[in-house]
Image 1: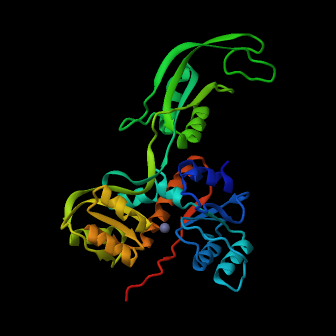
Image 2: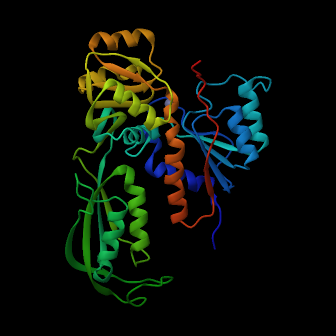
Image 3: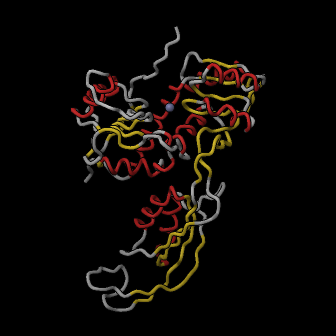
Length: 373
Ligand SMILES: [Zn+2]
């Protein structure tokens, strides 16, 4: 029987790929208003939680808004409902709408906002622009009866274990004998209560980033035939994947600046943008940072970018970039709205796979405050 997922469950799916610990220090991510302890019929993905977005959520009978930009960024001293922020909070609480923010954790994670932006620009062989987080590696070894070896190996591989370079499903197996005595209250898959059993088993070993540990262990348990699964997790000293803010990669082919500007406009569906002209006449290597890119001018230069695509560039920083010869395409902070569709698709897939009826929609309100006149 299918049913609605709870708020906690939906957020556990989200944090499965964008864990809170990946957020930049001090970023107020997570639950912002309301409660996750309730069934969720409808989730809405939004870039910003403005009053118009809350009205849209009320109209659409939404139970949970997952937003990229935190509604409450600086601490509030009071909730005065004659102010716009106070009114937004009042409307959310009166209509039992929960707000959860996935901000820099969704920027930093492997498959997050910056990767989606890079994808939209068709960048290839992308790398992290500025490292903020190093994912730890973990080794899993699990003991499986031979009959279920393939099933378990496939399940952990599909959940992301054993991904090394351009290879997936990497693992090592060794044969052995497992022993156990089923005690009172058990219903063993093999053997009888009170009798020592010997079973031919296989030990499967594989590695994974710690951020995938929960998903891999849960997939392993589902595929494993035993009530009590014997497995070990070891933290490793091998270097894990570096994650962080922004991406840098190459265009499929070189473009001149005008061609590149048209390419950016097409990619993000925008009609105008600001350009700070640097020295390079042809563009191949592109850095992209969603949101405020002021701090990423020098990382982009150091990594050899021909252009930085970002938003919110200040006048004096624009001068600095220009003096250094770096071209900046300020496409606006609002290009991050791509996260509405991408996160909706990702969550929907996970909710459907777990056979819940919760509906995921994206906010249709354009929250870009800027108009070119
Ligand atoms: Zn942003």
